[in-house]
Every structure is written in C-alpha cells, then in structure tokens.
Length: 193
Image (cartoon, rainbow, N blue to C red):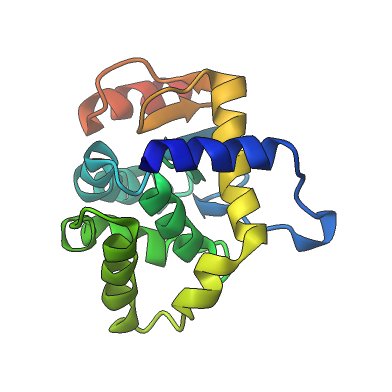
C-alpha cells in the first residue's frame, strides 16, 4: 500500500512544477569548487545508505572533504513515504547543511520501526524533538516546496542516471559501478585528483 501511495505522489508531482521563488538549497559538503564532485542518491529508509553514512562517509570526510579535494551532494531518492518524510526533515531548515541528514541515518534503527506511516512519523517526530535542530515537525512534513524538491531529485536521478537502487554514487557525472566501500571509492577518487 505504501508503494502505491508513493507512486501516486510521484505521478502527481510530474504534473506540477516547483515554484521558481521557493528554491530549496541542496545539501553539499566539501569544496564546492573542487574538480571532483560526488553526488549520492539515497533513501533515508535504506540500510545500505545508513551504512554508507556510518562507515564510508567519515573516512571520505577526513581524507577528501575536509582537505578541499572533493565535494559531495546528497540527493534524495526516497523509496517510500517514510523516506520522503525524513527527507523533508533533512531539508526543512533550507540551510544546505547535512547535520539533520547524518543524524537520521545514524539513528535510522530507532525511527524505522513500525507497520504504518503514522507510527513511523511518530518515531521521526520523537527522535528529532529531543535534538537541538529547531524543527517544527508538522510544518516540515506539510511543506509542499520541500516535497517537490525531494521528488524532483528522485525523478532527475531516474531520468539522468537510470538510478534504480540506493545508494548510488555519481562521480563527475559518471555512475560509480564498483562495490561501495571506502577502499574502492578512495581508489576512484585518487585517480581523478
């Protein structure tokens, strides 16, 4: 049922466009002028994406992002409504920062429990309310501009890069085809720097 509703949301979005005056900032870390640019298409309910944030991203940050050698943009590819709602929270401040995004991945096992979207939303609401994020959960979830942005990322990823799984890594506009671990990613990046 969740996938049918999500498909309907995507269909609805295809027939509507994002207001030019209400642009949502992308979430980008590292040197935006770096010659090596990574895009990560991910879903906040994807355990492999959480694994990337827990085990690959910290090393990537230390060795490449903090040194200004690479930039990384986190794009949305929600696989279900829970991921869509979590993505809305990650973008709600519209400051381009990834702190909420990283937190949701690190705490994914705590909020991903439940058989209904209502239960998952309650879990999300409870997990962010005890943090110092200054988010109004209900207004973030209801924000149609953010929803449009999230769904536009998904549509762009599917059309431009033929994405059908998460996480998918794009390096300088080319899909990274090797197993996603830091060793493989490091080798690929070192060849480009």
